[in-house]
Amino acid sequence: MAGARPALGDARADAAPPPQLSQAALAITEEVILDRLLARVLAALLEQARGVRGALVLGDAEAATVEARMELGQSPRVGPSVPLGAARDLPAKLVQRVLRAQHAVVLGDPDEADVDDPYLRGRPALSVLCVPIVRGGDVRGAVYLENDLVEHAFAARQIVAVQTLAAQAAIAIENARLYESLDAQVRERTEALEVALARAQVASRVKSTFLATMSHELKTPLNAILGYADYLRERATLDTEGRKGVETIRRSGAHLLGVIDDILDMARLAGASSSTRGRPRCAIWPARRSTSSRRSRAARACGWPSTPTAICPRASRSTPVDCARCC
Image (cartoon, rainbow, N blue to C red; front, side, top):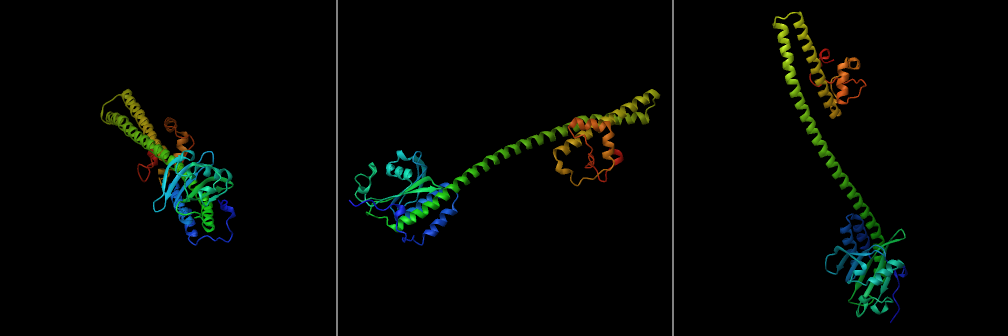
């Protein structure tokens, strides 16, 4: 039989690719989803080479897998991945040779093959074109095309077209894998943020429940004590010692009520620092806060920083601010 047809690099330099090649290359570069990209690459290669059957192999000679298959007149089938050595619908030994040597193999008929491959035996009319997919000097896979209708089906023009598209496919596959990796990272971080947000919302609800409970359970009886103390001081007939006792009750209750109010205010500010923007400013609060033992104890109780600030904790309650009462 005649010798093997020229390899990919030996194709005639003047064998210009068909005009549709630029459109096929552009369609490949526009796709970033790996599965759809593989289907588009294989369809374009089979069309440009005018083949009957084809397969797309990814990986090197040691760990190659068949990722996509296509027959003329049918849609590409992507997956499931099959190890190259286990594939029965293509010459695995021939493809492995192309992956190792990183050189294309073109056969006009099966008898030209110098590889003993069971797939090629007994197939009288079989033209084969196998081109490596190389990126940066590293083999990334191979494309296998065949035509079992005529011998010497792959002319120089088709070989150049497949060579061009294989180089473009190497870049597109690398970009698609990068996109897939970044997309997976984004999904993972988005899920983590959603979990964190859910926990924060739960914590916020717990905090709101605590503040409401604390305000009700502590302030309600305390206000009753203060009200009764005011009643005794204004209407009851008490001796000097009795009035001193009522004043002590009222003063201590008022002090405790102020501490509770400060804790509630500071807890709200700590949970929503952005809500302090636009609040009324209190000029008396910084100076008095630094010297007030009551406010210092309240700040320590809720974990508020000890340095003075210009935000009055009661400023959100009324406008204008009653600084004489709150500070």
